[in-house]
Length: 228
Image 1 (cartoon, rainbow, N blue to C red):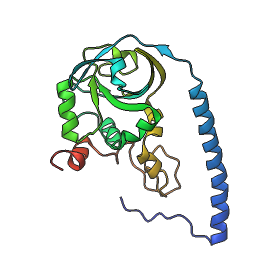
Image 2 (spheres, rainbow, N blue to C red):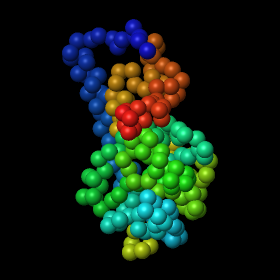
Image 3 (cartoon, helix red, strand yellow):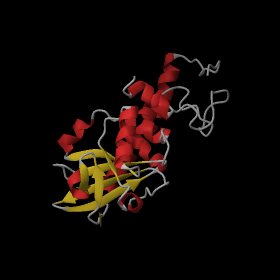
Image 4 (cartoon, rainbow, N blue to C red):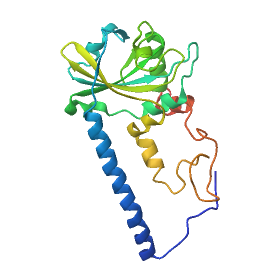
């Protein structure tokens, strides 16, 4: 949506002073995020049962999903039974992850787990051009036990493997997943931001309903899918 709203125009010195004041807050936020990460590294963990999930090549034990790594990030993708197009938020979020090999240097892997039957899940993966590895918990209590039950929401969980024993170390959902996404970080740098009505923006700034600018699942398929 076009807008005539513009930030005020000032001289270079005034702009620099305001940038320096903002930078002080940005640095404080960075230090706080460092402190939060340090607390996360000191979290205890919970031993997990020996779940069996469904993968592209058949049933697989939770410990084997790690491959050769000892750390695992799992995104629980929402699933609507019988629907061709799944959650646009999950579809758009996971479409960002196309260069996950960097995690190899950190002894980690990132996968998707969904409640959908594995054949349907893999078909949807192909439809929207997703490149991550998918697993199904349709025949397992795994999704329910980690905060993503059937007909429930999405979640991110982190696990640590010691031999054949798997432990759960961290969980988040809702806006807690934003820290994993580059898109919101980029959008929040823009003068108009996310342009959603809940945000604190100057008078006259373009704002619309929450999610109104998010790409739909069909948009993702059009960009990344087999017919793109």
